[in-house]
Image (cartoon, rainbow, N blue to C red):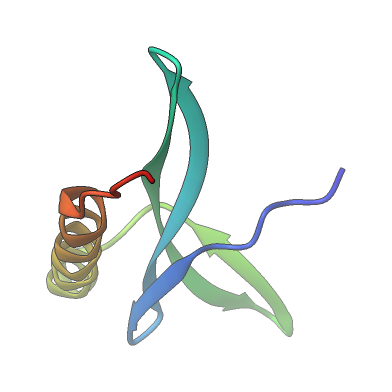
Length: 84
């Protein structure tokens, strides 16, 4: 099964927040809802891995990318799409 690519990615150091867009139908009208995935990239030997655990030094980076993602999602979901 292929995974959907993120709509937008925010990265500070090795910490990233990925925004995914999902189209849904609500009361007969189509809307785009967004979700955010937070992760950290690290090396295990020579293998690249990802985790959702953060140490104290990485928390400011996690907070910053989540803030950027929140602002992005708020701006996209605040836009009103006018229909013809």
